Length: 95
Image 1 (tube, rainbow, N blue to C red):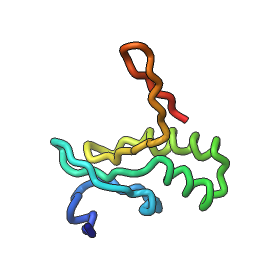
Image 2 (spheres, rainbow, N blue to C red; image 1 turned 135 degrees about the horizontal axis):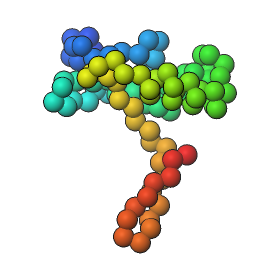
Image 3 (tube, one colour; image 1 turned 30 degrees about the vertical axis):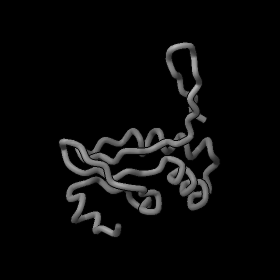
């Protein structure tokens, strides 16, 4: 489905120069928000800006994940987790 994000998710916060990391739109009671791939953001920072993985992760944590721009702040998906069974509960390891 092709949508005009500015119209479909009116008021949602878009991150500058990270359009290629958008993977969807999520909805909650406050409206629609932009869903970004953490992995794609890190790749963009490394390729475009020449950062190492460590530098990209530090930049992401402080400047992107730490950003609060209102109720329609972007959200981020991290697919690099592995479930670790531990008796009756499940823990997760993030790579």
